Image (tube, rainbow, N blue to C red; front, side, top):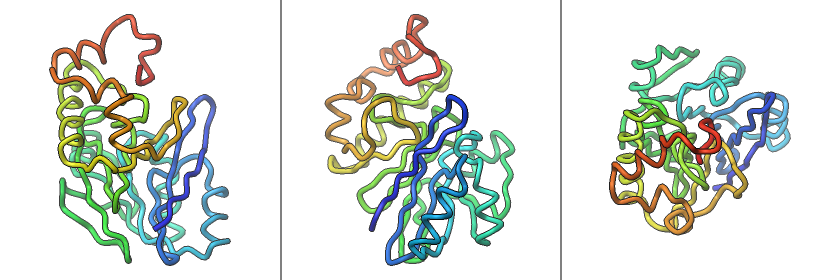
Length: 217
C-alpha cells in the first residue's frame, strides 16, 4: 500500500489531502482545493478511484468530494453523527459507523469516531496508518470549545489505547512537522497525548492566552 500526500491551499488555509492506493486501486481522504493536481496524479498512474473518505464536514476537507463523486461515480463516506449534527449533504453520500470495518476494492478501512473538533469527526485506520483529519495533528489537536474539549480528551485517550505504538498519523494540516510520525513520537512530543487528567487537558486547550485560537496551540 502506498500513500500520496497532496499539499493544497486556498488563501491562508493549507491542507493535506491523501490518496491511499494499492495495485492501482485508490481512496481519497479529504480532497480539497486543487482538483487538477489530484486528478492528474490519478490519470498518470492509472489509479481507479473507489471512494472518498471525509474526516468531517468543514469545507476545507470536503471541497472536492462532490466533484470526484460525480466524475468518478464513487461513494463518499462520512459519519452519521456528522450528517445529523450539521446537515452535511453530498452526492453518493454514505454513513460510516464506529469500528464498523468497510472494504473498498482491495483496501480495508476501520472508521474510528473521534468527536471533539466536530461532533462526528472520524479518523480512518488503514493498515498501520491513521488519517486523523483535524482531530489530531502531529503537533497538537484540533480547535474546539470548552464543552467539546471534554469529548476531544476522550477521543485522544481512545486512540492512545486502541492503536499500536507504530501507527503512523496523517493529519489534515501541518504546523511544522512532517506527516507520518508514529504514535510513539506523539506520546513524547504532542503535549495533548501526555495529559492524564481531563480538566487539565480542557483548561490547557481552551486557555485564553494561547497564541492563536484557530491553531492547535
